Length: 168
Length: 168
DNA sequence: TTTTTTGCAAATCGTTTGCACGCTG
DNA sequence: CAGCGTGCAAACGATTTGCAAAAAA
Image (cartoon, rainbow over all chains, first blue to last red; front, side, top):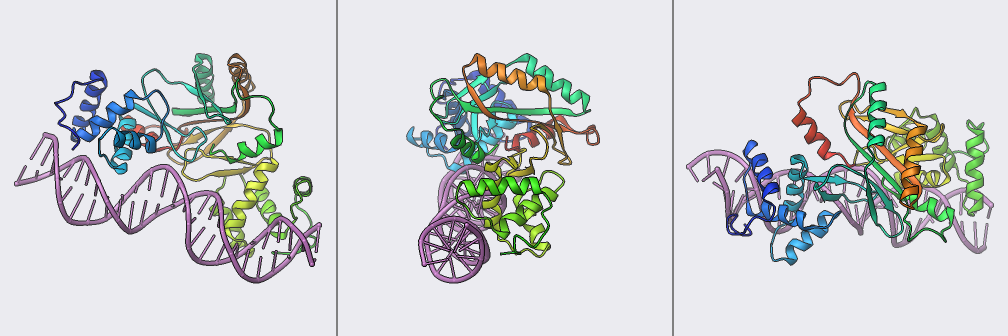
């Protein structure tokens, strides 16, 4: 283990409590590794991938294997504390579920991710599902393009080629 | 090569012509393999993956390697004749671009994919981009859930777990 | 003590690539 | 005949897994 679960002041009491309940409900164990990963996730600004989280933990002295990082992120997603997205890349992006659900504008030039939430858009989706007698559980909307800083000076053909490579 | 490009009546003259122009423009070559793949793609009902397309070609007597299938699908995507999606799976799905753009409802139980197009939803996205000074080139919207046939009798917790595994 | 978790390294799996040979233009 | 394209098999890269040792309940 990384450190005794009781020796550090909890940085995110609410999230820790929620994770503990989740674990107990499924007879899973509360380990130092799991708590260290939870803490690291909520310290992060926004989107990150498993690899960089693993690197950060290693840098911070926590010797947690990549396998455990993946396994724990998966638990956190199931628990609802973390969201997992693809954002057009070959690897998954994660984010702490601090605020409510939102969708993404992804800049294909600099990689910046802008978040947005539009109740009318959500309503529209609900109505589409109702029309088709489809029961929705999750949706994923990303808009790929160029952010205000990056737009201009690109060749349409080049952009088409890049968009074609996205994992979308 | 598979067969002389000239010995078969073109099944999709419009698409073939478009692909030929695309190839010529970039000084690429019109080969039997490329034409056979184009034909196979447009014979398909809807969404398919590279593996099953490769299997079908092999079954039809065309001995085309997996590598060539991937390379050609990539060209067709860049040409705009084929669209590539992820639909929550680990592998890419492709579809012939017969009709106009549309989004997808994906049943996480039976895998059925329903297509929909809503101009108001597209407009809404455009307006979001305008507000953020973001220049969109592509978007991807999938709604995951249960289709009319599959809904009912599922445990919320089990569904959450499944959704968490999606490559979204 | 019983059960779950961990780290490690090997395995997976869809996809891509280097290379020598074969075709197209 | 000069480039491209192709097949093959090996390489890739993100993620997952089997297993024996280690920690939590």
